[in-house]
Length: 291
Ligand code: FE2
Image (cartoon, rainbow, N blue to C red; front, side):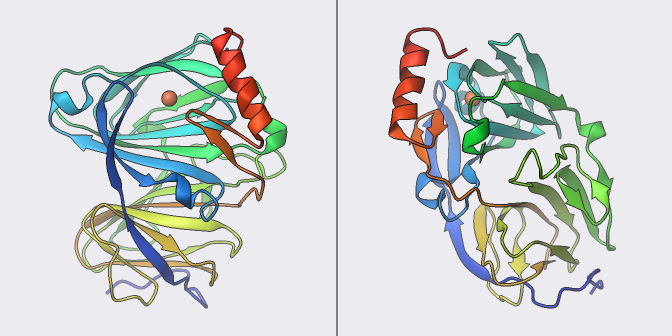
């Protein structure tokens, strides 16, 4: 077994495992909603995690035609496939194998996310990250990051870490923003484990964190029961980091962030602090003033 570096004093325990709920969204795209609205307080600042993965174009071909967002950020990570993004601020980009798109909806965007393939595999994730109240009406922006531009490190033998966001053992992620402007301080890692590899990841105790297993299975802390394939494991806030072990070749997302501890008011694609702000968002959208 490989040695975990650096070693943690008190690895976090596994609070519970969640199996995602099959659903459809957009114009009928089949997906699994892993982080559902009942977990928004527990996993603050994260609002949603969708996983999609299919070889059948009937599951993804209709895509996500024009739709609005306000008050948060969408983070899309493509494992396989090609998806074209276009938005009301004139932004356009192609999301493809291993690439990342980070979109700050802020005061409002209307965008589409449409497959640019008629067959083959489409697989990836969309994470919704909340914005603090003071930034919910900021100017919208987005960045497309190609796979080759995502830093990769191998901190211990048998583990490859793709650092999508944050800082990991001295490696700065593809997206890294100062705490003074972005208090959620998101860490987003795509971790690839060889059989019997072990990895320790330090995490501030206050950060809410979870893992999602998309290949194989992984053990958290001292727990013998693994986070099975296509399960999310919520990490208890009871240690100085997470210890992950894989007993087979596995791939795991690790996502962590500082909670905002603000009221969450959601109506579909709008996430604000109050009902009044939601009503304003709906009014702005209906009257063409959202974006
Ligand atoms: Fe969207």
